[in-house]
Length: 160
Image (cartoon, rainbow, N blue to C red; front, side, top):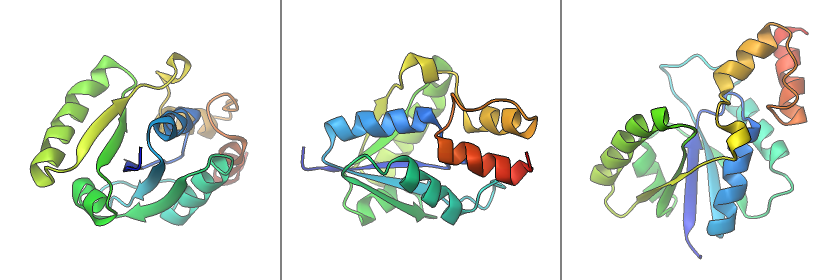
């Protein structure tokens, strides 16, 4: 229970599914680092700093969480912060193959870091940041998909 767990992701933006995984991980691990990935191959809507601030605000009521960013290999970053576990969310069976390959690659890079898969509440199993952005871009109601602060951020980005 004294282990540090890393929950990495793009979080563009953070959704209620992500928050659900954060809560589940905190029940298992005493310390959780939520790390925003800086990926030059993606063009995120929110900057790294904005994503970090959205996560901090959305998780303010959950103890034992640190929010940061990284641009290294996930497994190497995990070791650099003394995390022994990488948390990955699995929404559906279709996620498993990619996540399984990534977990095996991470194990090869850092054998002392384990990957733990957590499933969100079934009401979030279809939820993705991409879908949320698309709904928001088209003026749809996203209040049941994202924390209030994220909804406000998306409205500001899309001028709604």
